[in-house]
Length: 209
Image (cartoon, rainbow, N blue to C red; front, side, top):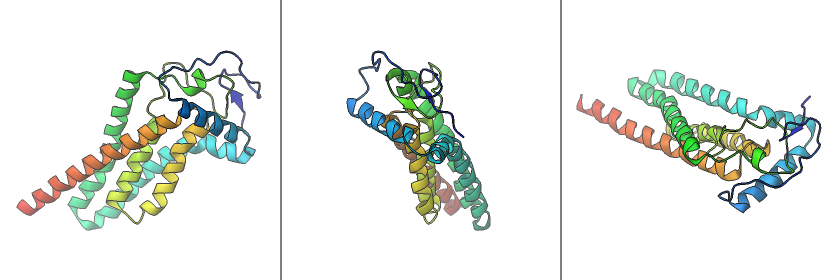
């Protein structure tokens, strides 16, 4: 069973009233999509709301599982492939740190704090826990890039699940759509750069030896 609360912390489905305190820097189209998505999720069946509420944790566990699988699969292919697999969690860490730096620089309030009369299905993070970009989406972007570059056949499964996990951050009410898109781009770009550069260095050193 899931408890539905509004973003003022009130239990049971009473809407918060008052003026919309959204900062002007947030694109209106992102706010409109956010409102539509959260309303859709709020009206979903209980079982689906429960799945959505757990999706953030599932995404992080899935990313950890993918990194373990990549290393295990590389063990029989030599040290170069193992080194490449080990670069995936390194890339995830670097992308996460970059995301945290951007959060501190931009300081965009969570939509559940800034947007009135919106219901969410998880508790809204505290003030100061900034929204842009989404860390979960950063990890999803890392997972997509790592799966594509290191085990392309696996990416057929990884891609849709990671995208769903990232999109759920909007549905549960804790991120704007542009937070998620930025997170996906950051995670994917940082991971691609690290893995491609790492592959060049690792295999170049192997050829020299």
